[in-house]
Image (cartoon, rainbow, N blue to C red):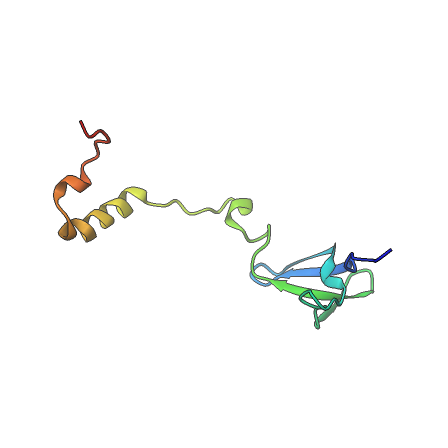
Length: 102
């Protein structure tokens, strides 16, 4: 029987924006011809072992959804800015809020 499964082993993911690291298992631990390859950087973990490390830009520690620091989007201002920008390209009926055509 052919072994088609990639190598699965421990890898440390490091969030570069929050300075947060976590150890998990991933297929990035293996060195496969069809995959991205094993990370070249390593890190010594708290258990004394050295693991490959993958730098990521965002994780649950830095994502606004998980941290609760989501921005409030000013949609009314954005709509008004859109109408001002494209008012010169068409007539004023295109900015009418009525949905019906009757």
